Image 1 (tube, helix red, strand yellow):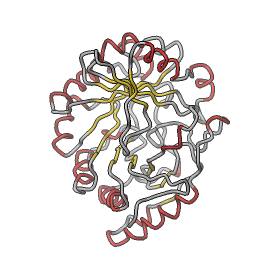
Image 2 (image 1 turned 135 degrees about the vertical axis):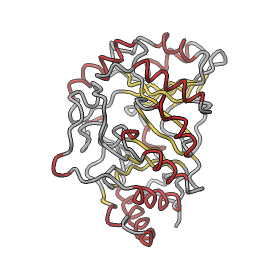
Image 3 (image 1 turned 135 degrees about the horizontal axis):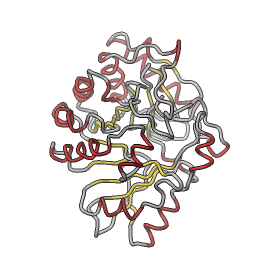
Image 4 (image 1 turned 120 degrees about the vertical axis):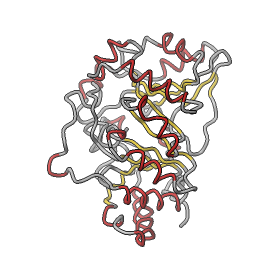
Length: 328
């Protein structure tokens, strides 16, 4: 099978695979009222064998990197087995997870032993009280212990995701920079994105990542070149800091021009964009090992309808009611 490619000659090296939409945090920008099942549409999540088949099919069409997302992926009891199943395929060179860090201190060593190569942890504030207010969980110290455990387990770098919010953390750059001065952490500021449920919050709290970028450039930070399977972050480094800063700015012009990733939901639907409409079901082609060619053909055909850009600028959030549904 040749490389997955769309009509704009974008090649897809990166699969974001949601394995559950359940989350035990209640972040103000995602699930402020806590997790609620998706009603009658809430079919069972992908099984271990289905995960093995879908990642194998993507790898055979050029996917080099898989990120396991949720909800909170570590809430699945078979999470370590899922890591091992994906890593059976040597073509997948990078296997990452995005986690709220809840299980990190306890389990990160076994995740690494199973084959996990990269780790993103969500931390929106370095103030324990504010962390509690944002997430609904008094787990700040537990998550920070988890990051220490990740380094102890052999991860040479940890990425930390911080959703940028006006008057909550956008003025805390100095605190964050001091934290990464002596730690190999890539701190990634992610612009708040409007979702179907979050319009009011967006209008109150959205602030452009340009505010951070201008401050970094004025302080001598330099932008790095991205590798082909990297995510959309603009990454900056500074000789005085062990850590790095990443900026994810979906409202910036040409954000989508380098799109290299596709998404599969926890119920087996292909999503061509985080903010697209609908989704293409793959579940019927994940029932046995001998359907891989058909599966790849369906994905390849679907790519002909991938749009050149999202439509967030026009306030069109597609079907994305909250970010737990597809893991951001």
